[in-house]
Amino acid sequence: MHGGADGGATAAVPEGWWRRALASFPDPVAVLGPRWEVVWVSPAAAAASGLDPAAVVGRVLWEAVPGTATSEEPMRRAVRTGTTTTWEARIGGPRWYELQAVPLDGLLLVVARSSDERRRAAAEVAASLERTRLVLEVSTALGAARTLDEVAAAVVAVATEKLGADYGGLSVLDRPARRVRTASRAQMPPEVEEAWADLPLDHPGPAPHVCRTGQELVFRRQADVEADFPAVAERIRRSGLRSGVVVPLVAEDSVVGALTVGWREDDRVGDVVLDVVRSCAGATGQAVRRALLLADRASAAEVLQRALLAPLPRGLDVELAARYLPAGRRDHVGGDWHDAVPLDGGRLALVVGDVAGHDVEAAAVMGRASGAVRTFLLAVDGLPSRALTAADDAFRRLEVPAPATVVAGVLTPPGRAGARSWRWANAGHPPPLLVSPGGRTRVLARRPELLLGVDPSTHRTDHVVTVPSGSVLLLHSDGLVERRDRDLDEGTAALAALLGPLVAEHAAAPLEGLLDALLAAALPRRPADDVVVLAVRTP
Image (cartoon, rainbow, N blue to C red; front, top):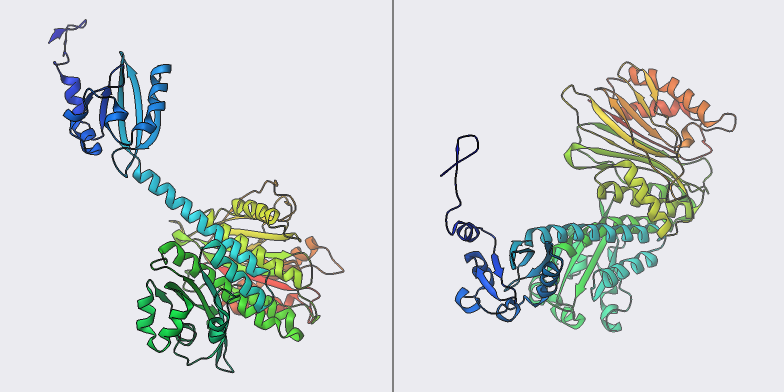
């Protein structure tokens, strides 16, 4: 101990203390000499490289330790510049390390820290984004499909081009005829495809089984599917497929077909593949249902629109209700839609939109727009402005031909005082309305922003309002308020005046009854435009 300036004592560093300190590091540490020879290695470094320290000390690092040649350049740069250098490399095996070289007194101190967890996390994020991108592409392609042939083409393209599969098949259930018809696009010999093309529903094959039961099938080896379906084992062998997945296609709570994705190798059905195929199945089921309905042109307006509208989620802690009313003209096809998307943390995303135009093209664009907004609400963790900004960019990349007005927002779970918050962004859409339990109505109008798909550089803004317990939040399309004899603002004011008393009057009644009363009072018998209304009431 030595006396300090203040009369106290200071400790001296014991002999050999620094080497013992470095040796105690849990991360690998090595010291190199001026000719890149290994001067000293810590026990952790020896363990990581799998080499005996006595076998490497005194030898040039990249000659003594396999896999370190890629580290020569950054180490030379650290010595040349006299500054600390950081890089990533493998050391003595499959593990990744973040290495840091520190030049000090003619020696080079090298510290390695495992970066496997960070790389694994980054890979998981990248895989998640890739899955989201694939699902968006599928939703976009299927949103534009109007016939079963177009749906089948989109399904096969996703299976073969995006998932690297050898086979993609769309099986459609003809329930009245009790038949299962499969389109697979010449991926197998003609006689094999013909054998699977049209089968009775009670056929002992995988696709009819899934159409009958609604149960998913996963086959990781050819022996698995042959064991489960021995009656068609020879037919399966002729197909050449050895692993795959068959998932049911469901629309409006009913099985409409099956989606098959297969490979000519064993064990190709991993978690990522299953996630993508299952996600694609939902959009495919809706597309099949829509294509079947479009075959009946006499009712194309209403059936197309309803097929594109996602069903409302169930089991929430709020009450939801929605309405879609087609315009009075039977040849009219619009682009109005509503959507409700549960998010994590008890949050609920609500969307109402309207694509410009009144034809089948508008409805097809609506399928793309609604899928894009829903996907991006999930991808950006429910931030409305970011979701609309991402959808703007998607419209540009996908060359969507018509703009859309959209209002999208997220309702949070209640706080300590029981109130919730509603965060929303509005792309040129009629403003939402918020009604308190006593009937006071607020029109949530803010500075208007450009329609979706007009300018991808448009700045999108989030707005926030408190939603007390017992409130009703109403989103709607312009068909509810716009008339030839009045503008949008006048119609919105009239709706607000009408809605407040109705909310108070129906406070104890189901939300469905409130919407029935609202539409009966607000609309003419044959509205000139489609009408979409989405309402939520907080307990």
